[in-house]
Length: 107
Image (cartoon, rainbow, N blue to C red; front, side, top):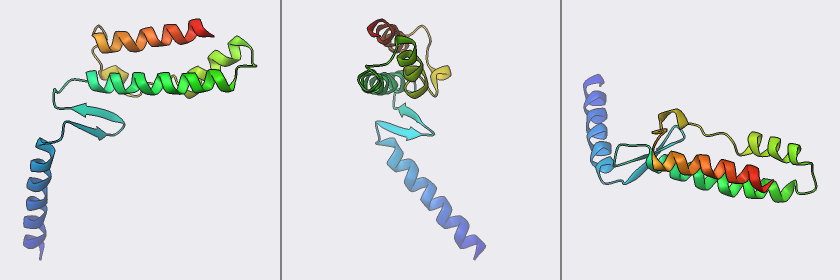
């Protein structure tokens, strides 16, 4: 029984490996991994999510003080889980940083 379980697990691992070779992107623990083996795609996805959330928050708290709006953006949209894996000097990370600056200026 144990031998059959091990062989079926091995077959499942091989099957999942074959399936993974044809996937362009995959979500793993909150990170968007791509075939290129860099985190540029993850930064692009997080940038889009930040733009969407920060716009919604600024509209929702439009009657609030600017400091309150910035705190809300920081709390609800400013989490960039996995940013420590990005190329900090890369173009995609730079776009995320510029989006943050723009969001602060718009408040």
